Length: 172
Image 1: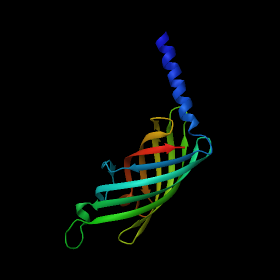
Image 2: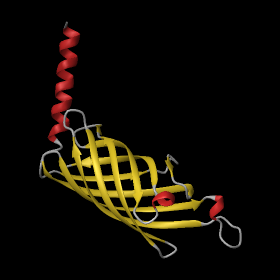
Image 3: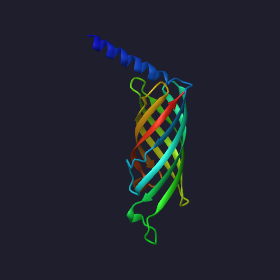
Image 4: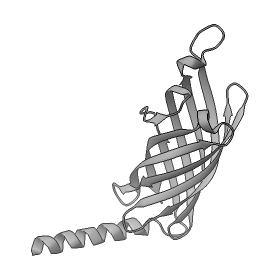
């Protein structure tokens, strides 16, 4: 009986602590990467990226953010250049988006609009839905795994990517 009451109180306390961080007016910073090769695109053989996100909660549970990301890719073997060497590609990505946090459990649903400039002087636009989880280590710091689908609006079948990313967030 005591064990059930203790576990119930601890769960309630964790929920209250997490929900306090999703209040309107709070700010957010995040560094993330999907460099664990846990993404798939028809064009990519290898992908390394790192990104930063900064946001603000405009009302409780709703955050709007801006992001920047650098990506280095090695393209698949069927996308070789004219000399027959592997082609590398760098990309700078900028975007804006929003997230809705479910206070009871820390799950969030997000959607971003992104613009990417590629090294070979062509541009791409993406629409990126994601679902993730904000796991609070302490009152301010989180580990945030997320699954995303980066849908290319220019070349849907070849340039779209599905993947997993891991981030460290700071709520203040």
